[in-house]
Length: 160
Ligand SMILES: [Zn+2]
Ligand SMILES: [Zn+2]
Ligand SMILES: [Zn+2]
Image (cartoon, rainbow, N blue to C red; front, side, top):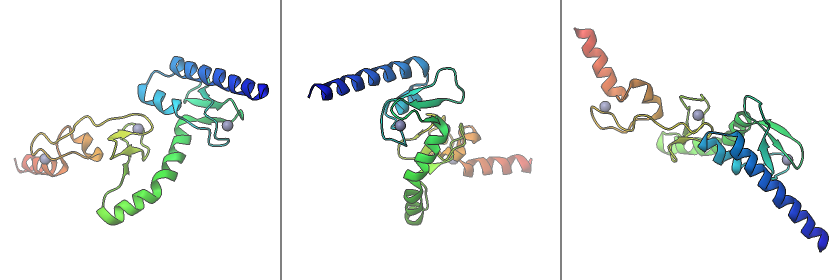
């Protein structure tokens, strides 16, 4: 019984330390939240914290000493989570649940949550300023126009 308590104590202490390190070493609020809830893909422990001074962001599991790059592991986790869901969604509705993020270029922009699950990118333009259509993540490069309005605009320019 005493031994068990000891183990719990050690766990609590290490978890606190991880949270402290995550808080100290990661500035981005989205990434911070993701790493706080990150579970080691090898052993399932949440005693995960960043390795100081490493870019790209690399995490270490204090239980099994496994090291892994944040972005790479997230790409794997998301593709595992979403490949089937994207397949089904596309078959049923013609749309995907995740799209390519214009910022980190991974297929990690969640349509449901309207945020990139890896880098935290959020759409800059919500709606087309000309017709009010909701803009997809692919249309963000058109500076606030939807692709239909953008095409129209381009053909007007060509006619001149
Ligand atoms: Zn581990
Ligand atoms: Zn991203
Ligand atoms: Zn439009």
